[in-house]
Amino acid sequence: MTRVIMVALDGMRPDMVDATATPNLFALTAEGTRFANARSVFPSETRVATPSFITGCRPGAHGMVANTVFDASVAPDRLLRTKLVEDVLLMAAGAESPLQRSSLAERLAPFGLRFALISAGTAGAARLLHPAAERLDAFRWNVEDIDGASAEAVREALGPTPAASVPNTPRVEFAGRVLLDHVLPKLRPDVALLWLSEPDVSFHWGGLRAPHTLAALHAADAVLGRIRAWRDAQPDAEEIAIIVLSDHGHVTGRGKRSLRDELCRAGFRAGTGMGADVDVVVAPAAAPGMWLRDPTLAPQIADFLATQPWAGPLLARDPAILPPGRAAPLSLLGSAHARSADLVATFAGDEAADEWGMPGFAPFDAPDVPEGGGMHGGLHRAELATVLVMQGGPFRRGAVAQEAADLTDIVPTVLHILGLPGEGMEGRALLGALDATADAPPAREVLTLPGGFVLEAMRGPDGRFYPTALRRALRLPAVAQ
Image (cartoon, rainbow, N blue to C red; front, side):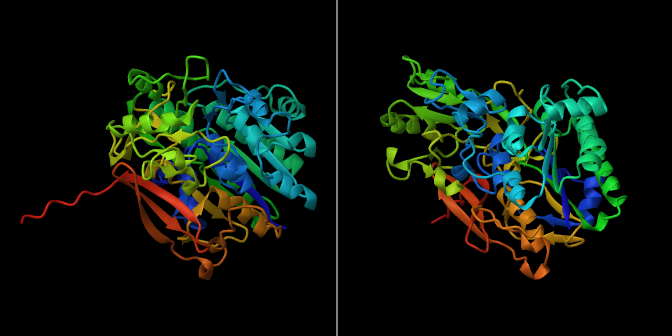
């Protein structure tokens, strides 16, 4: 029976996969099936992407709508940061998880199959990837874990977890050891997921091609090489598939600003909690959310943003709070949920080369990311494009699949090759990875958005909408009369 090892390179841009920086991923890509049209979800943030991936549903269905959110019902005085387990559990309001769809582990368990998670990312993201670990008596380990049976077993087997650093190479390498020296040989899960925090950490703090970023990327790629070597040495190697993915890409941040400060300077009472002196709660991000005390403020905010050269089109959970044509609906992107912000701002990026020679830069709102650091969360082409490679087991060799794909399609594909049902998921099995005749290029669309912008998109064979890139509308030169 097929076993699956999934490896996530957080934040990896597909156009950075090459024989020099990532020789192991480059080789795996050449020998497996690469998805040329793989995309993230919106917002393209990790704690939105991870539940989208693990549930096979977009944020409008599973309910995790941003890395940083406001929920007046559980924390009226502050923003919730989903990288923290305590805030994730606060959002759950006494339930096991804030997710409103089943995770991969919960889908495997009724069939006697086991899932294991090894995470070098944040503790909050690990909880969202494997929320039912305790109930299922399953393995979930994160580099920040101190307590619990999994943390104790790892300490006994491998010693203490290294401290966090930039680059986060020691933790990435240690997480690889947890998978290879403990989980795979001792626990033998049917599906294992290794989540590596690089290159995301180094992209944020050093830039896309800084020397230490390339070193971190090479270290993460070396872990992948060791995983493949382990797989190839197993007696059932031909039945072990490897899936490599990234949750989002990165764009170089240029033009750092605080949307909350911009609103305050414009006369709005903006803050990070709904106090008596606050009318707009703002969550900083590459696509900042705004929760309004009074929805009649929406047209005034829209008027202000329409005059700002750094602002992209406005998105709304309920576009009816604005005059027609002033905002695009979040539902278009699969991101409208009761937890969603009333309004979501976007930034006007550019596709010209940055200082590293990489296409794309954009303004951003992130207090702890420096100017010039990598950023993600918005609709820039570089933020939405992701790595997706499936190799070994039943997957096609040396193929480039053209079908539209996003994070929600990966788990349905895993379930399909395991012979398990996938009812209730929005994603679909990517059959183009298994059969060339099932692969077909997507239909392409260009949608007009408010403020002189357009959204490039794809349609899958079932009509499903996949956003690809937000850009300014092309202005045709005037014709002489």
